[in-house]
Structure formats: structure tokens, C-alpha cells
Length: 426
Image (tube, rainbow, N blue to C red):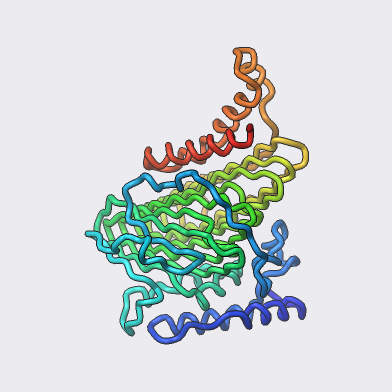
């Protein structure tokens, strides 16, 4: 990525506001990441990979203040039995968090893991660096260099109790950078939940290494604070016969960019990335996904649904890369939007790049309004128009929500979507 003079200047201005953490096993990765940021430059409006999303407020030196959203509504996942780890504006809250002890895994904070020899040393920044090719992702490298905290989760067996990462937002000017590393050993499994707005501006990276026969399940609900801005990255590496499933619900947020970069390196691996978003008004939501098939008989699914109204904007950039020798690949990609008025827009760029000849890959992208025939059918049976519209909207989102394997989590997400639509009716 050639950096124009203005872009370089903005990069230097942003770097000048940050302090590189030092001392410990992550030093080499941080120094390498900083060098990559300085070489790449932070993204600008002319970068091809950001053509649909203006990165200005995500990279500028000063944080755009974001009002704190107050509600009496119970937080998502709050009623589920889970191990809670709480961050407030990017700062760990020990009093609000549970004890980290849980059979089958170890959890440490990045800020406190200072030993020279640590299992995360081989992973921190490694998957992120691998994910910089063929597309550069400077905000992820910035995160690796400057992340102030995060959690390091090592899973050694099947763990039934979910790990819930809770992100609270209390300061209008907060600027949070968190970096999580998850290692799932062979045959082990874990579910990680994420919930909350996190900060006025949030930069988060999660690196996930899923070994042979292991499973990683991830369900995320991005908070309702409308003025928040977020850039998140998930980098995942899958071994043989492993499973990776991630789902994201986004409601509100003036600027959100979620990237997911997955490498299927072991035969018979399975990866699913799905998302449902509902946006109203000054809302810009970007899902960018890159899945690389580099093994035999692997399956990947990308399922994204967006409901937009009152001038909201949705973006989807999804790519499936099938490398030479990755025969029997099954790659599926669908991105669809439901536009509830004429002012909203959906911008999509689905891609396939295939270098193997025995594959089944497909992609599709559509955008449209409510089905008038279905709406008339419901209205003719006495369903009020607003309620009928909501029912059709939930039906539209259902394909993405169905990708969540756990039934209780599916019901939770469906309930939150129904509540969001009902509030828009009142």
C-alpha cells in the first residue's frame, strides 16, 4: 500500500498519541507490528479495501466523542451461566469480573502475562501478521503493537461454560485497544461470548488457533451506543477436522468495521462466519471477510443479512480463496440486505478466486424491499402493518441467526432483534 504524504502524516499523528508497551514476551511481536504500521501507513479514503467505508474517524489522532447510552434493559447474555470478564472503556474491572479459575482452561490478562516463556508468545501477532497478505490490514497491526490489555485463553479440554467478554462504555472520550489470543488444543472446545459497546472508539483483535479436532464457537453482540465507532478483526487458523463458528449481531453504531480472516490449513475443517445487523439513520456497518482454503475437503460458509432504514448504509466485502491442491472445497457465500426505505443503501463486493478444479463454490448478493405479496397476505389476516413488517424482517434475518449452533443463544439473539424492531415501532 503506497502511502501518500497526507496519509503518512495522519499515521504519524496517530502513532504520536500511543505508547508502546514494553517488557515481556510480546516485545518482539509489538516491535515488528509497529514497523509494519509505519511501512503500510494507516488506511485512507483512496485505499481499494476501504472504498466503501471512510476510515477517517478510526485512524485520526483525536477520538470523536460518543455519548454514553443509558438503558434499563438487561445486557445481552447476562442471564446465561458464564464466566464473565469485564472491561470498562478498555480497562479491566476486577470487581465486576468472575474468578478466572475454570476446569479445562487457563485465562490470563495480557497486561499481567510478563514471563519470558509463555504459550501465547508463538501466537500473539503471528496470525495477524499472516493475515496481512494478500491484503494489508494496518489497523490490526496497530492493535498488535499498542494493545494495552486483553485475555489469553488456553483451552485443553471440552469446556461447557461460556467465557463472556463484557465491554462497558462509560467515558465519552475513551479510546480502547484490546487484543485477545485463544488457543484450543486438539479435541478441546470452547464458546466465547462478547457483548457491549466497549468505548467511544474501539480497536480489537482476536487471534484464534483451533487445533485438530477442536471447536471454537463465538457469538458477539455489539452494543447499542449509537455514536460509538469500532474496528474489529478476528484471525483464525484451523487444523484438521476442526470447527470455527462465529456470529455477530450489530444494532446501532455510527461506524462499525468487522473483519474476519480465516485459514483452513487442515483437511476436513469447517468454518462459518455469519452476521445480522439492523441499522437506522446515521449508521454505517461494514463486514469484510477473507477465507483461504489450503487443505482438502474443507467447508466454509459466509451468511450475512442487513436490515437498513432512514439512510443507513451496509457494506459486505467477502472473498473465498481456494489454493492449488485444495480439492473437494465447498465454499458458500450469501450477503443480502432488506431496505426499508429508498434512502438506505447496500454496497457489496463478493469474490471467488479458485486454483483447484474439484470444488463447489458459490456466492450471491441481493438487495431489496419488503415482499409486498407476503405483506398483503399477513395484512389480509388481520396483522397490523407494522407488526407484519417486523415478522417479515425477522424471517429475513433468520438464515443468519440459524448459523448459531446453541439453541439458547439463538433464542437470545432472536429476542434482541424482536425488541429492537418493536422499539422502532413505538
